Image 1 (spheres, rainbow, N blue to C red):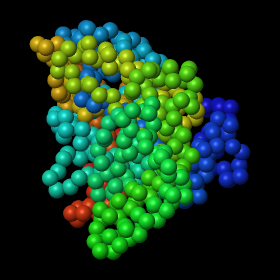
Image 2: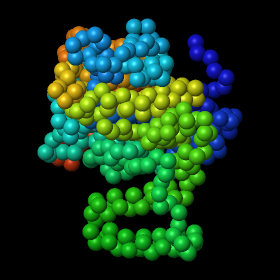
Image 3: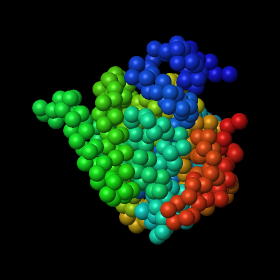
Image 4: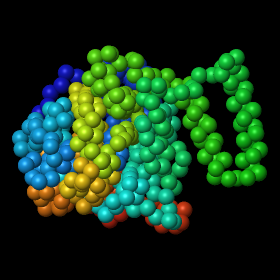
Length: 423
């Protein structure tokens, strides 16, 4: 049984409000936990971080190397902390954390177009002309998030992500493009103090009330909710979570001096504070040309940020309740093109899970010697999404009615992959 020097996050949050506060959390993060409990949300419920590899990462050059084959490429492999799991040589820090990972080498889908593939792997559904499906982040916000929480329940870092669809604007991603800059434009305007700002809000409410009565439009209600949430955010001490300067220089260096590394550090801080879903994007994986130079550079960004995130979550006793997903929209072709590149390939590719109840320290599924076909334990997109939902204690079959009168669930006829779930 794993031993620790103090209560886990689950144990801490399930204590009474007057219980002992752990010294590792600043007061404003402790207050966030108490607020969630006060508003009827289980503060011990799970959270999720999606590391989105935009463009489609090559499985052969990351988590499913095919060393010595005609199209295996120039990269060597390294051993990981899991026996039998070798990774690309440019992921040494991630390899050290492999005992926390479940590497899925048998993902398969049918969407080889970037836009369609990205939509599919964010929502679990192929694009439709009649409905905008909610992203997985929006589902997590809807099912696990506290509507009275000061911070957004869904934050997207360095990418727009996919919206909330019919779940409502309050579950859409709050975008942060530059993680080190935090949230811009929160301070009051020059010559506007708190009293004057409150007066302006009262005047706005009067105008909105009249307009609302005349139109009764959904867009007006959405605007009101966003205004209310924005004001709470401006006035909340929890915005300190967005300040990376509060971390030591040693910690910041461990994540890497890159935008992706800073995004991973910000994701950890937001999860600690109570945000339910954070997406961090690393762009540039569309390697049709000069694949190996590009992937080497991308791995040098990915490796420290990803590894430090997993390590920190584990050391802070947060990993059990935080599901970390690594994936893109598809893989890349086993065949190396005349441009020394790899093209789009949805037939067989890799995704990686950690934390959140995942059965870690394993490779799940296999591809053939060329990385071209799944030969064992195929994982389809519906089953993948059913697994993610189950890990987060969300019912993947629960249906909500869409505006067009069609019931929609997180996973369309998917079944959880039990081999990926601990216990």
